[in-house]
Amino acid sequence: MTETETPALAALAAAWARFDRIAEQASSASIGGLFAAEPDRLERLRVDAAGLHLDLSKQSLTAEGLGAALALARAAGMEAARGRLFEGFAVNSSEDRAVLHPALRAPNGAGYAAKGEPVSTEVEVTRARMKVLAGAIRSGEVRGATGQRFRAIVHIGIGGSDLGPRLVWDALRPLDGPIELRFAANVDGAEMLGALHGLEPDTTLVVIVSKTFTTLETLANAQLARAWLVQSLGEAGARAHLAAVSAAPGKTGLFGIAPDRVFAFADWVGGRFSIWSAVGLSCAIALGFETFQAFLDGAAAMDDHFTTVPLERNAPVLMALAEVWNRNGLARPVRAVVPYARRLALLPAFLQQLEMESNGKRVTREGGGVPRATAATVFGDAGTNGQHAFFQLLHQGTDVIPVDLVLVAEGDGPPDMHAKLLANGIAQSEALMIGRPEAEVREELEAGGMDPAEIDALAPQRTFPGDRPTTTIVLPRVDAASLGALLALYEHKVFVEGVLWGINSFDQWGVELGKTLATRVLGELEGGETGMHDPSTAALIARFRG
Ligand code: F6P
Image (tube, rainbow, N blue to C red; front, side):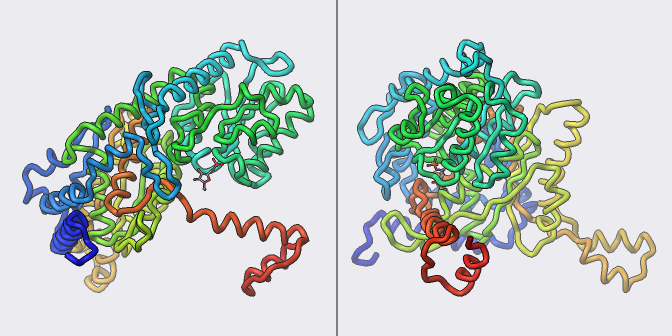
């Protein structure tokens, strides 16, 4: 122990050192071999949580490695850190904010407090207002300026103010609902024009979602949508077609949104953790509040699991430990997410923000350098589509890329079709693990009578190394409760990883520089004074300058 180290820090450093050593020793272990060596492996690494089933047994985490990872979690003070999150301490230390997304999905009467200030009543009031508006719009009690029922919602927002609602809608949307929901996020005219195309202002509600109400993309889209409304309904009429979700009521007022159509976005709700708040308003209206409530209940059930189940059976904790094993123990920088459900096709995009904006950090909460790798790069697509795109690399590429496979027990459409989808997901988890040895390939080619020289060239190309780890998550079906539980599972996994890495998972300073420079560049593109730039940037600005 050095002079500046506390006993707790020394214990954490020792736990990391042990974890690293065990991971290195286990780095060549085959996953198939682990099943043989650890007879209780399957039972130990399978857990049920909030209606979901999680199977981590095809990860390369050994029994000893899991022990070391659990010891690491304990040395990092995981249980105390979890307590601080749920008790509303300012765990977002760089912004001095509590992080209380679980309060948003807790049943009425929960009694959460952010930095000592009670928040649950405020949550319940907002939730009740959402329910009233959703019900009134769906029943036709609340109508547009010309007396017509709302038939469409255009949801405007970006990042956390877009990805969650977009995923929820895509996952749960009925084929023929009374209200269509469209989204516009990017500051690209094509996006907003596409969102408005074919809609009538008389029957369209525009919901603008921005915590800060300063986000360039959202404001540009909101102006365009507002002008579209005003053009046919007039200023006064347009007000009946606008709603906002924001932490900046002064700014929504200046934008012309009636105070009774503004829904609060508390400062203790991080953008990428906000789908449970009024950020879900568009979904609550378009899907019906009962569905939205079931989504909240599913997440609350995962919160219960996360806060009550011991670490060794705790689904988010186990997922985080497997991730740290891959990322730190075995230096694997990328993870794929493949939901075998078209309805969950947007899950990888949602997780990109949740995981990479939360844990893509290189500095600790105290400002020191993180001595190890943090968030993996996340990518993915729905299965089986991904199989026909990037699975070649997963099976035979030079990097080992762990994969999260999400399977759904009960699918849409004909059962035989769903069986095909499931079979593919299950088969991929097996194929990635067992691979196909060269000897077996050679045997097959020899049996086919191939020339030995040709076999020498071909057999290695047709060999699969295997030992590519997967986690399988099973949902009973893609319904609101399962989706809520799934997203909360990933949220808590992200939190656990952040605690292990000693970083603040709840700020995002890394997005600021680009925003600042974009404002400066925009001024120059619009003919303002040119600033100092490197030759490449200066040439690009000159090329587009008006
Ligand atoms: O990309 C940065 C970010 O601040 C995200 O964290 C956030 O979800 C998004 O922008 C949108 O911010 P706002 O809700 O304030 O418009």
